[in-house]
Image: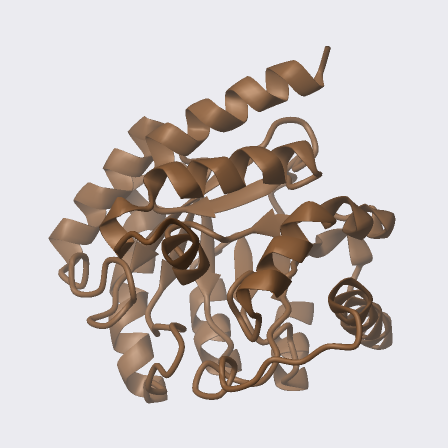
Length: 270
């Protein structure tokens, strides 16, 4: 496994959606040549990681059949690994997709369901890769119906603790895990803001923390702006997240976020 120091400087994860229906950039990169151009752009802009997703996880998104997801993701994964020296992450919750991608030596499996499916743990146990476990209440089809928590921070922490027990059961090293509290996934606006405000409470796990809030609807609702006009709000969230303990930012706007993170890193090191 490629050793990555997630605690040294904030890592920027550039989003590449090879989907027709993602909320922000659906249909823009589901052609392999356009996708590769975008990968090159993001690397030049400072992306440390490229996260490839072939199934939209926006609220109400349709489930993509297994073969269709494989047909979308494998060609781009093979080309990225062949043509670029970059950390590669695959956004999938299907164990079969993870297994096929891991054959190409991808570095990270990013599971929005937090490895609920234990078949996924069986797969990743056999390969050396990092694991991003995101918290989500429900599924993309149901998550925004009526998200409810006793205490949002404690409830998410409890789910992470349960996952750590599962990793132990499968003899998967804890230091492979990255935690994502799941901004916008089964959360109200208030839940999202609370996670961001109290993000440092997740540092007790002594694991890298990822925040994926780029262009999300809670920013649009607070600022009353459409998806393409959420840069400033996304950067404000990025800056606060780094200050409060985020180690990885999953974003659409790589260049701008990289600059913000680099500035916050410099201040925090004084």
